[in-house]
Image (cartoon, rainbow, N blue to C red; front, side, top):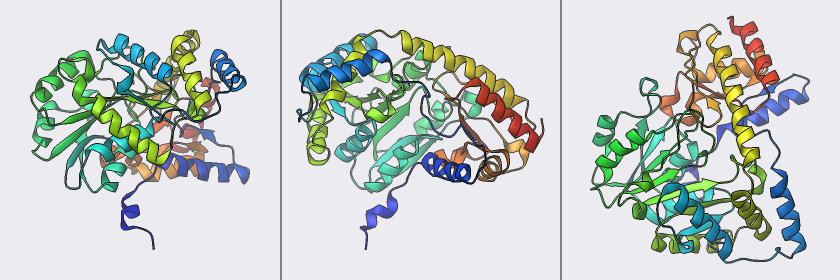
Length: 386
C-alpha cells in the first residue's frame, strides 16, 4: 500500500497529452505539437562549450549542497543588479531544475492546516505540492477582463490568519500575462504590513517578455526578506534537459532549503552549474533572437486562432503560450482538447489542466515553427470551421 499522501500528489497533464500524441504518431497520424512548454531552439553554443570545458577540467564531483560558491556569487550579483536589491551568495540555493524550489520552499514553510494562495489557472505543481504537505490551496482566479491578472479587491478577501504563503507567477504560464509595476505596487500596498506571509515569486520566464518590462515584488521596500525568487535556465536559454534552477531567499530559509537538498538530491551537477554561470555572464544575443522569434510566432498564432469559429484569443505579453477562450464552441475544454488531438492532429492542453478556472479555455504553446503553427491553424479550421 502506498502512503496516503501520494493520493494528494498531482501531475502535469502536458506530459500525459504528449504521451498520447506520440502514440498516435506511432499509429501513423501526423501531429503538430503545441502542448509542451519547451523552447524548440538549441542551447546556445557558448553554454555548450562551457559545459565541455567544465567536464575536461574535472567538474564531475560533488559540490556543496547549496551550489558552487562562485556560481552562487554570479547569481547573487545578477539578481542584485536586475531587481535592485542586495543579495549575498548565502541567499542563493542552486537546484536541479526550478521545480525543487517550489517543493522545498513549501516543505520548509508550510504546515498542515496553513493556507497557500496560488494563481488559477496556473502551473499545476503549485496546487499539487500544497495538497501534498496537507495544507489548504486557495485559488486566486485570474480573469480575462483583467488581462489575466487578478482582481485585487477579491484577492484581499482571500487572505486570512491562516495564510502562510502567496504564489505569484509573471510572466505567467498558461496565459502569458505580465504583472506591471503599477499592479505590483498595488499588490505591495496590500501585503506590506502582513509580515508573517511569505511570497514565492516564480520568475522563470523573466526574459521572455514582449510589450512590458519585468518587475519583481522582491524589489519593493521590505519585501526581499519575505520573498523567494524562483528562477531557472530552462526557458530563457533552452536548457530544459540540463535541469538547472535556483531560488533566492533570506539566509535562514536558504539554510533550511539547502538541508532539504542535502536530504534529497545532494547537489546539482557541477558541470551544469558552471554552464549556468556562462549563461548569465556570456553574450545574450541568442536569447534576444529567440524572444524576437517567439514574438513573431505569437502574432501569427493569435491572428490564426481569432479566425477560428468560436475562438477568442487574447494577446499575451510574455512567455510562449496563448490561452484562447473557446466557450462559444459549445464544447468543454477537455472535449475540445480531445477533438483537436484525435481529429485535427493538433496537440494542446485543456485549460482545466491548470485549475478549475481554466474551464472554457485551451493552452497552446507556440514553441514551434511558424510553418507548423500555420499548419495547426489550418487543421483546426478544417475540423471546426473558420
